[in-house]
Image 1 (cartoon, rainbow, N blue to C red):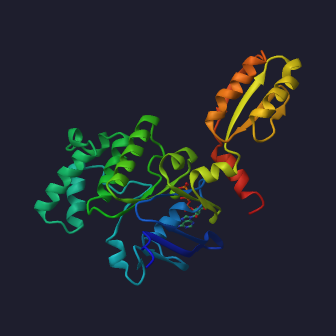
Image 2 (tube, rainbow, N blue to C red):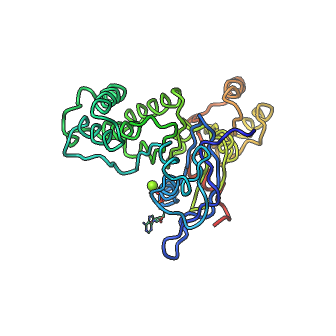
Image 3 (spheres, rainbow, N blue to C red):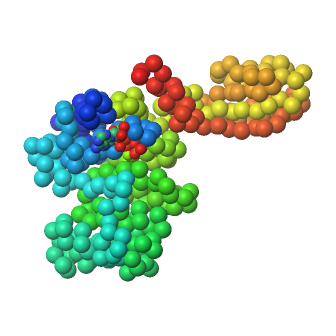
Length: 311
Ligand SMILES: Nc1ncnc2c1ncn2[C@@H]1O[C@H](COP(=O)(O)OP(=O)(O)OP(=O)(O)O)[C@@H](O)[C@H]1O
Ligand SMILES: [Mg+2]
């Protein structure tokens, strides 16, 4: 028997007018996995998510949630996931507690059960101190945490998050990442969308890269970055006369050729452990260097490599 997938997306397509914004997308998400949909503005991430969560009807294609077809078994499929949208669905004029109560009641909880779940979620998301303030006074990070709390009222096994950290400051962003990791530790499956490679890298077990509505590639973050050349060591040789010596000295330390642009040298690193011997060799040859940096491939690099000639 094959294990049931948390999500199975087959050949999803959506057109708005003449524009095909989701174009024959298929992928699977395993239970317990964090799966990322990575793509730039307008790639079709939200549209894909809206079709998966039955907010939008697909032109063609099929979505199954834990084996249940979202069209034929819509009610059952919907009962298995929570959704946190890109734009807040909560009411800003009332408090966090009131919002959680209302959504709990809408989800069919009794008054008593709603009260208890609201208290649990306020505690879990560190919102107790501001529970009775109107949301107008909340920071962006607090709003996002409340959004997420609302989508967890029914303890869904699967959670969809649309750009959970866009617009948050770095510290709040890191907190949100920790919250998401905790959900996964508690056994949830998470499908999130993001425009950021570092976020996908930090959270996702596997990624689907989408661009112009097409699925470009599915793989682990490591596989993706490997494909775009992985991590690079970049530095400048201070003396022009020493550049050739530097290239010669480094040759035995590297697996791909040292790239030279003027006095700048670039080396692809397979592992960070290569760094120490490289720097030792430079030091030993008494070569002076400056502007040393270790660079991760950016989202731009990924898209440049993966989408060339495909549009
Ligand atoms: N209801 C709609 N009617 C017409 N066009 C739409 C509609 N919704 C989305 N689109 C278009 O579909 C394309 C994909 O939009 P979508 O919101 O799915 O992108 P996204 O990947 O979520 O982008 P972002 O990172 O900006 O949120 C865009 O060109 C958008 O303008
Ligand atoms: Mg979007």
